[in-house]
Image 1 (tube, rainbow, N blue to C red):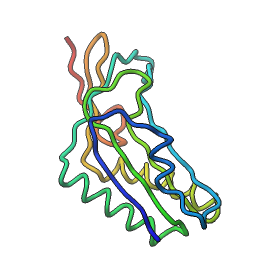
Image 2 (image 1 turned 90 degrees about the vertical axis):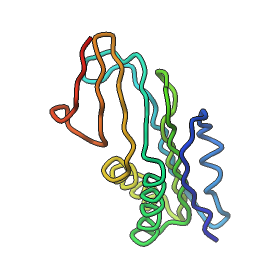
Image 3 (image 1 turned 45 degrees about the vertical axis):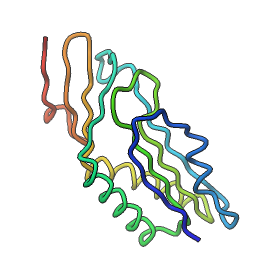
Image 4 (image 1 turned 60 degrees about the vertical axis):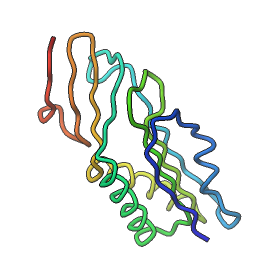
Length: 150
């Protein structure tokens, strides 16, 4: 029985609780990514981040990713929860959990999901620094970021 899910929220994320939602009796492994706000990005000290999304499209794209993961990998369940709004250093911004009969498929799927999510889901991150701010889209390189200085 598949119990995959995807959500956007402004509430704090409980990594353990999200991960346990994908665990069926027939699986031998769950791999969970806990993506959180780091203090330094390419040598600049981050004060906080703000995540925004085009929510209807983001949810549709997250659903598509989960459907594709079920076709491409030998997995049981997937859970993706992304936080929106202002996040402080150390707060979790995304949790991706994948359960599978065997760990290799769970690891591969989790890695594939975060890469594809950053590439295809319309969620944007604005990084705030002491000396300015930067909008970051997906896995954009540093050269494609839009920087605003005070």
